[in-house]
Image (tube, rainbow, N blue to C red; front, top):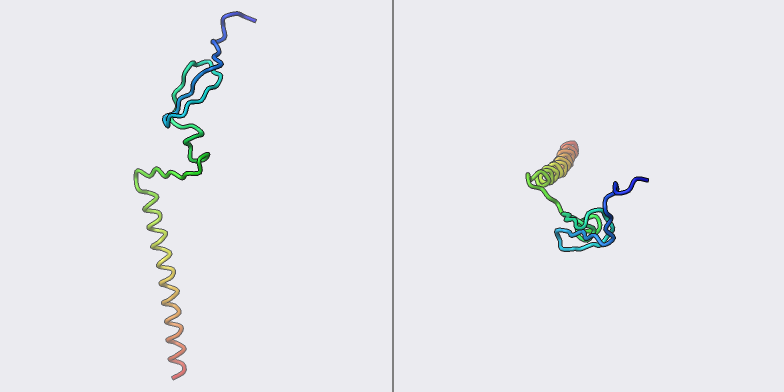
Length: 91
């Protein structure tokens, strides 16, 4: 095997997260900075974070509510017309 071709391995490499969490692990880099780790990631913490900069989620929710209210309104109107037809037949 050739000598001096492999990078130096650090057993005590530090991984520093943006949230402040510091993890010690083995790596070929002495210190790394990451944006997200298991201490702050929503999958591991259970906290749901919704990054919606364009408002698409809110727009979708509004459309869903609007269509649901239309369905309810149509059903109530249909019941009213059926009821009115039954009363007209009785007379």
